Image 1: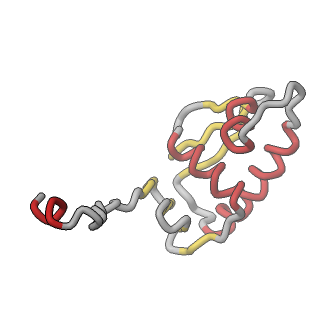
Image 2: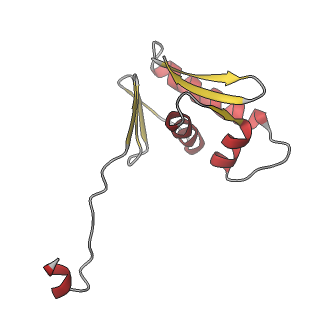
Length: 120
């Protein structure tokens, strides 16, 4: 572009279109870190938000405790505390299910394996 040749110190900015994850009754606005369940905004902690995003982009897949722990906590410990993940998922589900009792999605536990996020 001509502008950049004339003014080399001029910075080029590109429009970053908002990434939205949309599932029936759930909308995640990643550029704003906002979550709407039904029509209601849901306030989540950083870990809860990261869990929800990870679950949503992997909708329909069973994610193991190891995968979840590595992605959300950034490391892997030999004896993963499944209770740590379970506690965060429980709080996440409580907030989402309270905001939208008739939701069209669920986060289900796959016993001794991990979790699966599914649209109904």
